[in-house]
Length: 215
Image (cartoon, rainbow, N blue to C red; front, side):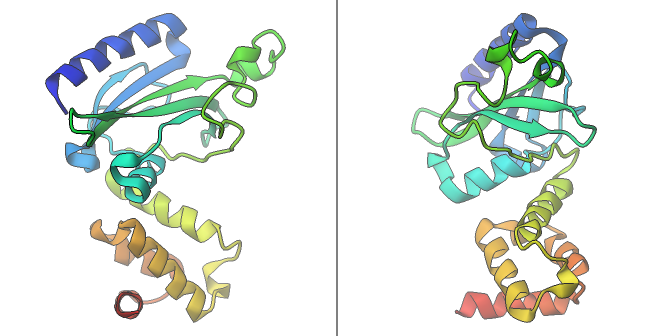
């Protein structure tokens, strides 16, 4: 990330967290190494630290849209412990329009939900955003990059609404095809993990990969 961009974002992060207090976290990611992209952190709502990877949501947006990836504003996310967050992710680009990172704002609005009338502007359901603010998004805040990869795979499997043991060959092959398009298999350990959750051998996954790529 360009030094001027990083310097400005750090100042911005400090200003945001100072304004909103300890319930707010601002994270800066540098995509020069997505496996440990978190380079700066103000606040600590999601319990991460410098060196953590990008989230599964950001990974999927960049893989799908490339340098045209849209900002994701005012979306609702729920942590495993029940905390409700209102989040915004904005991509940072260099002078040529290439994405070089992102800045993410995570605001813990758990208590505000019970006071929605008094604090309606903080309500993640009614807050202004980019038109998708009513979406319930499950974003996983991984401590390391393999966790991000696993979350992408788990999210894909969840779309089928059935346990892997009940999936037929065509469904498993379709999953492999979708994951291949998303770039998951460029990540070390992806084949082994998918084989484990699908209940097949890694050689079966490689066989599916060969088939879908030939098709």
